Image (cartoon, rainbow, N blue to C red; front, side, top):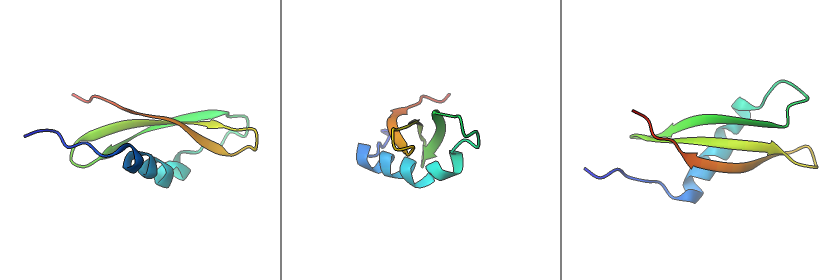
Length: 67
């Protein structure tokens, strides 16, 4: 069976929805990243950067191969 992929917009929306649980507690942090899975077996890494307004901005979401 072929692996189903989600649209870029869907994957980014999921990352935006769950990112608040991964924001670093360190007030000096300027970036963070986390992995997440979309069923049934699509894995991604989302990365965020702190912008000039001190708001977390999505910088990338990339697929991650899992064994």
